[in-house]
Length: 84
Image (tube, rainbow, N blue to C red; front, side):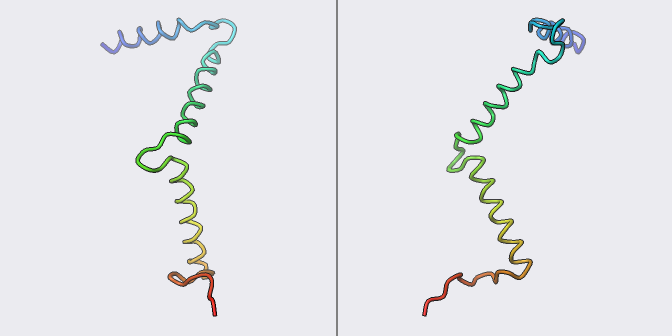
């Protein structure tokens, strides 16, 4: 079973042209395009109400705030501006 799958994978990989000239680098354009598609999905596709980068920016902001609290630069619960 495993041997047959291995043969099938080798056969499929052998169908990609450029084996003599480029070797394993012949797959580079495929992975480059795959990375571009993943990046586009992380930027533009919303799961619920957020994209990947929305979550990343929020978490980074929370970590920076927590670091400032730990350093004593900010007192939690206090507003930033005080009006007379």
